[in-house]
Image (cartoon, rainbow, N blue to C red):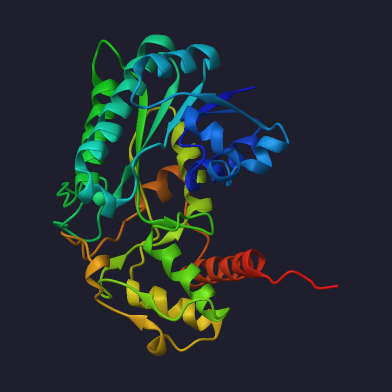
Length: 336
């Protein structure tokens, strides 16, 4: 039985990946910050169903502590390492660029260095990002498109990309290390701080009479939005190849934030013009990325991967999930 270690297992991608690997017959381990064990109901909300079944094993560790990473790798001795953990909220990276750089750059460096010493034969996956392209120099973006990041988060991911390549190509190391250049991928498990989830959750609140307005930033920013459940399959496929390589994972379609919001209100049966306030200063990035669209033809040809969930189906999935969630959280207690 293969063993996989997932950093960031409590996040959106980590939870979907854990489920996927379990179905493939893997023994799944996750590295989580020790503080998470103190508030398991909230911090483990995406994987509580797996914990209760005893399907996964969690290990305390921190991306900021090289010794703790070494301890986890020594205990688990994984065959595959999926490094998903990061400070992943782009807007926050402008507010605290120092912690973003430290966590994201030192984190991957520590994991790669420890793995190269403790489990040098293990395969390594790095969650790169379309934010590395930033102010894009060509469209659509491919594996050969030059990086031009416009946020501390994007810069940190470019650094992680080059560190991964260093450990892959250094003649004294030669790790099987790959980068998945993932474009935006969403789901009902997306964090509330991300614009897509903010839209669908606030739509649900408005539908239930619990909010009056939805404040958003730039309506014209375009993104390539896919479904996280589809994207984790691509991560696994990259790790099954005979030679390490990098792949853009995307849908090849672009939609504006306005389109996403209007579709969400349509699903809920609401008129968006009555509730959405655009260009809210608090929701506009200091440095906006206006267009991201990926060309996944290499993944299609080599991995035989393609996205399954369409844009409108993704929005509907998220809105319907939040409508149920809000109804459960705010339902009135029954009176006898």
